[in-house]
Image (tube, rainbow, N blue to C red):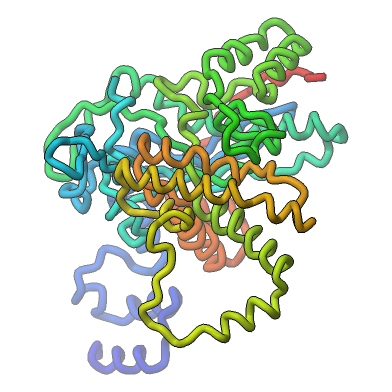
Length: 465
């Protein structure tokens, strides 16, 4: 009977859940295969709640801002770090101590490439997490799953708040409240340490720290509280972001923390003090209590948005207006066929390419600075031709931070926003498209939502002027 029914089932039925249940209903199938489940529903329950998973389950919490509750779905950040740290697939690619690399035996030419070469550290809106201990050759490949979906933040425009400034302040504080909820466990773990087992079975005492923030310009402003058209890293004036010679310093973290502490002195004093240090009035920023964290230093270069979608996009437009698109096309057509053509052989004008070197030395970083200087020395032609008025562009100014950030956090392929965009497609967009687009909370439950009622977190929000 069993041998007769199986060919009929395979011919008439497809791979749907109903067909799978029909298969299990055939006499003798379950017994022959030794299955403990009777239908597709029971199998899904085993997969969702009984099988061990690489990532911890999602939690659900409500953050209340200005009298309105917002849902936050997130995983335990420490458990996520443990999952990456202890993955056997990464056992051969973990670094445990900071290192200096040199290009010569005299140790005069430094090399900068991986993120774990740090030295100073040792003395629904998806949020992703990775650890710098994993070698970048592995970490930058989306197929190796070195990033974990840490949580989903609520997205809202708060249209019921009529005052534009108040609405923006509320959205900013909602973001920081949610991030505080997600990253809160790093406070004690960073100071006291946590025992973690690496993929090879060795036990280590680790101090997970918030080290770098990867995001585009609006996300950088949201995290730092810096105003639009200003630099999220340093104190350069908005009117000087087009200069390559004006001196600058990182925002003073101590002064900013003192300003944030002025919240206890009243709303007006709080707003005034925050304005004096160049940030928006943030109520309980997510980074102010994290050990050894400096949000202004943590902001990393963003090649995708700052160079490709920023400077190069502008440059192509300016050149088209200066020469004419037809003239550029005509000159390109006149170029002889040459499969060995090489551009920027001296490395003095190719800032875009130099900025993406997978390994930098102290010499190539000097070339990177020379390339940027070359552009600034010649950019005035676009003003002379009436194509552009000024170069006070935050994305242009950001290039001045590249050499120092490469020395601090490794080459730019360590923190490219293109990686998280790929993850967003795989984990969020494609996952949602595979559903029936109904009961969105249920979709999160499929990812492993812990049962239970959410615990509201009340964030006192003053009426800021």
